[in-house]
Amino acid sequence: MIPLHQPALEPEDFEAVSRSLRSGRLTMGPSLVAFEQAMAQRTRRPNGVGVASGSIAMEIALKALGIGTGDEVLVSAFGYSSNVNAVLHVGARPIFVDIDPSTLNMDPRKAERAATPRTRAMLVAETFGNPAGMPELIALCSRLEIPMVENATEGLGCELGADNVGRFGRLACFGFFTNRPITTGEGGMIVTHDDHLARACRAMRHQGRVDRFSFPDQPQELGTKLQHAFDGYDARLPEMNAALGLSQLQRLDASMQRRSEVADAYVRRLAGEPDVILPGVPADCRMSWSSFVIRLSDRFTKDDRDFIIDGMHRLDIGAADWWPCAALLPHVRQILGHQPGDFPVSERLAQRTLALPFFERITDTEIDAVCDALRLLMGRVGGARE
Image 1 (cartoon, rainbow, N blue to C red):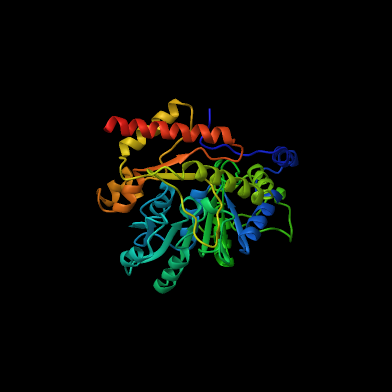
Image 2: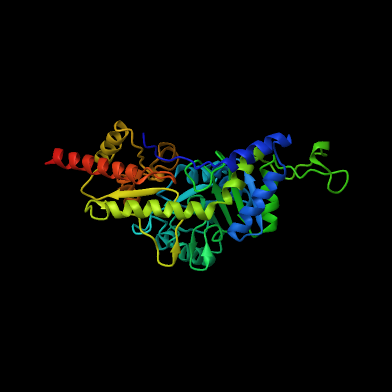
């Protein structure tokens, strides 16, 4: 079997988690603080706030900005469901914006046309780790005088010119699922330059608490005097997860290098396929590949793409349809009433994207097998059509 993704776990990761367990401090301890500081340093922000997932990171970030009922938030029509769900969960209204077909990110011109006097924020993601168009979106936020929440999950370590992913938004959010360059299993992080927002996020991840202590530097084990400043969540990042993330973060550059080699290997094997559109990399960009997602040409339909995915699964090869047109998710349509045709670029791409197996320990032989299976199944679709 060639899985779709697989975490790279080293002996030092197991030792870090074991050491955390042996400490007896399982939450809100030194591993979390160290991981937060390391993530803040890596993203060149002064504040890191560890949370239970990337999804809850975005929700907390929006609430920290005061986004709620009656507010509108600009969101890409192409992307993972967590983006729109975060907006819905705080009571705001997502305003979908179609994407630029060359970058797969929110189209700045369409975003400007979609903005209204009720627009209070923009939530954007670097799709598949690609930061193209982010400077233009930041400039638009400045003109509209709204903050950006950056879903930076797919681009940790990525650099675009003098900037890096995690520095574009007023708050940036990361998730550390098992297919990322670093993983905590489950978990997330908020980074920001705004001390006030960081304090609000820290409180909200802990049921809104800003507890009082009896004396300076009092150990948490002695307990606290409860004080609540916000409503909040049980959204703490456990010590074991933080220890794993901190250990893996030390190897981020090596992970990025290996993932770049895997991406290059796919490009070399598939560059001559006329019906395969390969992911692009902006000029002056150091990519952080969290996945490798191709697009099939317009000669293929959604049913063709799904036939290929099913066929790869039968061959024990990973494949997935990343991402959907979020505006047409069933629960979103029920709330907002969008119809097919409202976001043509996102809809067309969502029907033809195909994620291939991508992880650090994949071998050249396995990459060959993936590409051979892809060609075989594409040929079967074409042959059946003829």
